[in-house]
Image (cartoon, rainbow, N blue to C red; front, side):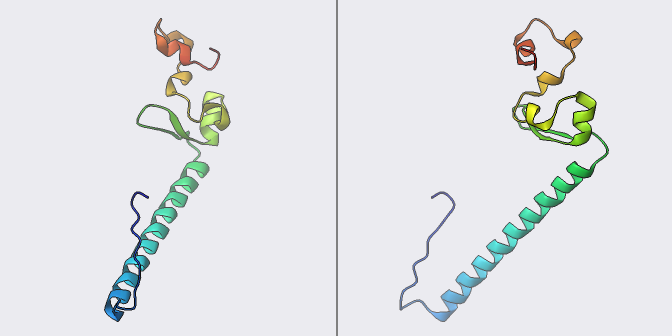
Length: 106
């Protein structure tokens, strides 16, 4: 498994090694807890914001969408999640390219 190392304790494992392993595991748990707390904090900000919040992936697909974005753009979260941001472009901005094919009504 990527990123995981299994440590097998043996009778020859010293108390110091066990303490070091305990510290490593404790630090990893704290890091995970902090990361999860930061994600929850960001999610709360996005959810409660009176402003439209849209987050995109590096490829331009919608990753986050709040209620204000739904009111502004007229699409519910389930309709846009994972879809290209180009679906939100007004028809008048759409040219005769592949981008037009990604619109909601296509």
